[in-house]
Image (cartoon, rainbow, N blue to C red; front, side, top):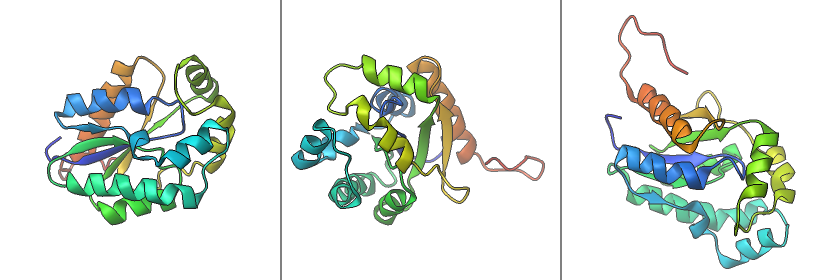
Length: 179
């Protein structure tokens, strides 16, 4: 990528944000911040109990991520955040207008298997349905790309780097517009 962007790795629980995020950051040569670390303890307790967060719960979390992204403007960085709703992404963009989104998406059965296999995470698989119900995919007017989560973390990261680089590449007169 030509410009040091801040990339928000987004998607429902179990898509691999925490796995792909650090790999993406390493590939781009920028720092990584784990979005879950920005949650206040009350949010983690709520999710651990199997209760989905509501918009009020998410505001301080999104604001903390937004402050981090703003602090990295012009320097680059990668941070994970489910960023499931357009409203949440708008809040992040309000704090850091130049963020790009890398939406990890894929087959629900694969994502559920991966969630079930992970150890020591506070998000139970029971909340996956609420995540998919809440998800609003990136709009055509949002700066970002969508990457399928099939394959290894390294393959997913490679696809992410390539998709982000295509976004950053200036388009010549004969080059088709990338969406």
